[in-house]
Length: 91
Image 1: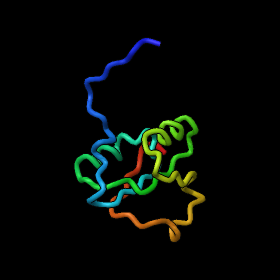
Image 2: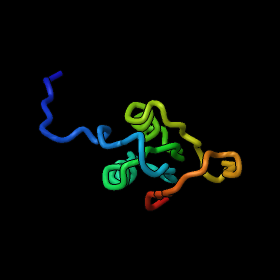
Image 3: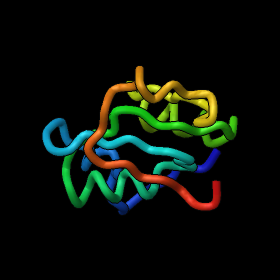
Image 4: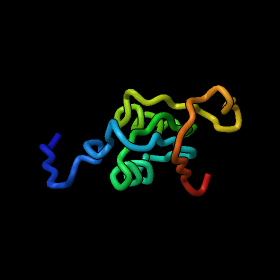
């Protein structure tokens, strides 16, 4: 496999430990969520993604963040509250 070089910015370095707590629905590959975290600071507390391919990428990008799975089956009364809610489109 050829060696890959990136001159881009590591998007995960923007996810701070201070700032608003972010929740994500229909997360996809977390581009929106990482962008929000970059602008507002904060951290992603949880996400909801059912696509298995996206789920594998999210597990690698956000290893300490819980995937709630299908948002139709989530009991949001028992989920950690968030201050910012993002949602991908279409979902």
